[in-house]
Length: 179
Image (cartoon, rainbow, N blue to C red; front, side, top):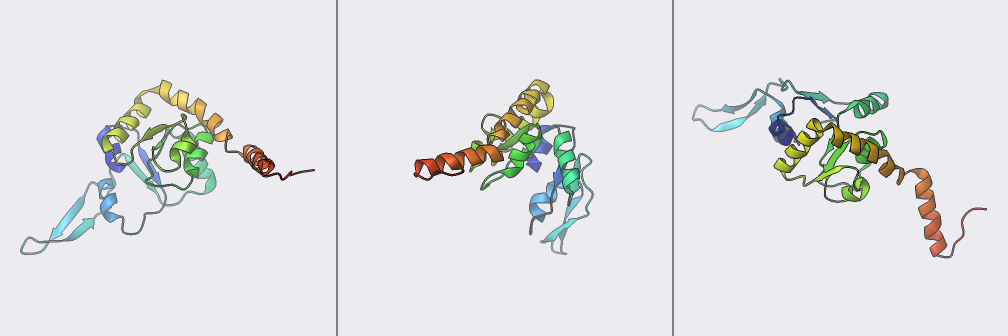
C-alpha cells in the first residue's frame, strides 16, 4: 500500500493508524526519506538505519482513541485497506458505515463484506492499488457514489439484520425463537 501510495503521485496525506508490526522495518522503509544502508570497511551490507524522518505526505499515528479514530475515518477522503487476509473485515464495514469511501482487497472475506460499495483490488498488484488511489483522489463523483453505497451495504451487517438471519436459520432447523 505504501509503495502504491507513493507511486500514485497523490498529494493528499497518507495517514497510517496502528502499531508497527514485529519485524516490519523492511516493509516500512519506504515511509522514510533517509533510510540508509550501513556497510563495513569491505563494502558488505551490515544493516539498515532508519533515521526516522518521515516523508512529508505520510503521517504515522501509533494509537488513536476511539473518538479520534472515528474522526479520522469520517474525515478521510478514503480508507485504504488492502489486507492480505481478513476473517471478516470490520475496518471496511466501519468505514462504510461512516460513509467513507473504501479501497480494499478482492481476497478472503472482503469482497463479501464490501460488495459493490468499495473499490476492490488485488493486494499484491501495486499498479492496481495506485490506480485506485488516484481514482479516489481525483474523482469526487466516485467518492460520492461509494459514500452513498457504503452505509446501505453496512446496514446488511447491523444487529437487526444479524438477528433476522439467525431467526431464519433456526426456523429452517425447526426451532422457533422468541415469544
